[in-house]
Length: 381
Image 1 (cartoon, one colour):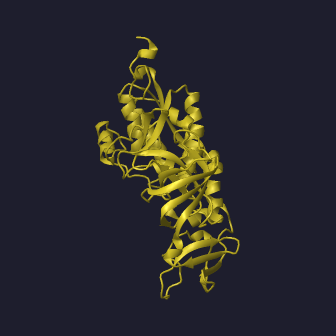
Image 2: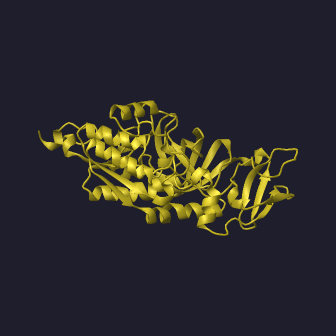
Image 3: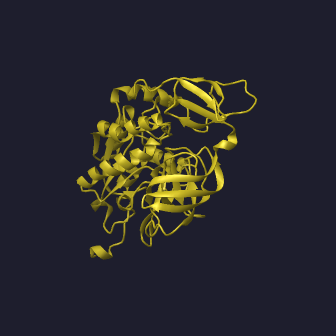
């Protein structure tokens, strides 16, 4: 049968699985392990690659992390059990420069960064993807819960079938060129239970391994401790100030606070519940106020990655749904482009706690398609 008329295999290529090389990004967890095992069992030419992203020694005793210590060992065991080659690449320097340093600097600037997005954008879907091509792979597969669907104008990004596992918020910056090379075999599964059942069917040692928690390089979610280690002297004391100008107390460093925070402010005994509404880094002030001060309808975004049909046209505007935090449901909004990479997003109903450093991800209204997104870059208008 001629190549151009051959039926497509499950990864979308007109040739047998045995002639299709796929690099699987293996974090050592159950999701990517199942992807590798499933593809190997289907007859694909699988190559597993694990990135060591941060200090191996410091991670050995940690649980609930990825890409270091025990996780590398677990990925290797899966590869040995299933009979495909596995490589570990030292990306510590790349990861620090592309992800960790910006994470620290963003917090110092009063933002609330999302390093998992930067890791996908700058490491996994850039350097690792280039490595996959160097290995003559036809595509690269990951364990992310998101769907890649062929549309009229090429591959589209869609939310996962299981809303509880959907990771589209963390993958909005995936470019069309990257999407053409990527595959997400788990995106269509109905639940995580199906993934674990597949792991058990393949006899994988990681079948019951807990999901990773928090940010991989932040033990127990203690962001401030990591930042102080990376940027000595970062935790400078200052004042906690009410939006009306009253000094209510002191703090041990702006890095200990995030927009929308209510608990742990250290200013008890007041009649009204107060929230962090602004971080004044230059004056080392944590500004607090009533909950209504957190509401905003205008969200400025930059570094826009557009995945919709057609160009991100300055003369156009789009009615979409947007998500301003990973834990929030999509809300109706209008996008008005200001440049090819900047836009103003107007929320139809106000949202609370919109914070610089978070992502604003665009979705097709009433549908599952991801239309891209951008980074929230300054506070309330």
